[in-house]
Structure formats: C-alpha cells, structure tokens
Amino acid sequence: MSRLFDRYASVVFLLIGIFFIVESRAFSTAAYGSGVGPDLFPTCLGIIMVLLSIRLFYETFKYPPGNVNKAKLDWKRFGILLIAAIGYALILEWIGYVLATFLFLLIGFQTMERGKWLKSTVISALFSGGVYYVYVHVLQGTLPAFPLL
Image (tube, rainbow, N blue to C red; front, side):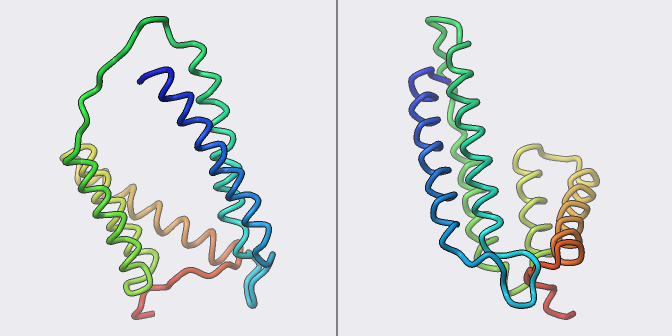
C-alpha cells in the first residue's frame, strides 16, 4: 500500500476508535436480565481500533522508500462481501445469531478462498456456536436465538 494512504487511514481509524469509546460511555453499563451491558462491544471495538491504528501508523515508518505497489482492486469479492454483510444485518433478528453468523462466515470464507468446503463449514459452525455459547451462557448476555428454540 501507499505510505501516505496508510498514515491517513490510521489517523481516521484512530478518530473513529476514540469516537466509539467516548460514545459507548453514554450507554448504560448493564441491561435488564443480562450481566453484559450494551456498552461492552462498542468499547472493545473502539479500543481495538485505536490500538490497530497506532500499530498501522508505526508500521508506515518501516516501509521501504520509493516502493509503491499498485494493487489491483478486486471489486467482485468486495461486492459479494458487502452484500453478505448487509444481508447479515437484515436477517440476524429473523433467523437468529448462530445461523446468520454461520451463513455469513461461510460466504466470506468461500469468497476469499474457493473450495475447502469442509474446513469453511467446520470453522463457521465452531465460531458461531462458540461465540454464542460464551456470550449467552458464560457472560450471560443476550443474542437473537434460533427462532425455533
């Protein structure tokens, strides 16, 4: 990538991360019937964004001088993943977290690397089921359940 682009992107993501942290402080710290409040995810996301943007800014100083790579943009994959993300947001409440996340991850894995259906299916199932179990049963939060349950 371009050193200048990466530096600007790191500053933009740093500001977005700080915005997430500051604005999540306005949320309540706990929801009724849940041990995990609605402020947890945006706060964690903001912290991760701030840390990664600082890392990206630091990495730009290690770029070799004068090395500019013109990468070909893959609009087809981007379009598929964008549509999958929008679809995920639209069907999450309707079909539940586990199934929606499983389908989104499966589409994402197959878009990025065709084939390897068994590996993609197993990873998608373990991740969506594992996150649901940890968040709902261990942390006692709430996520949209499978509608038939």
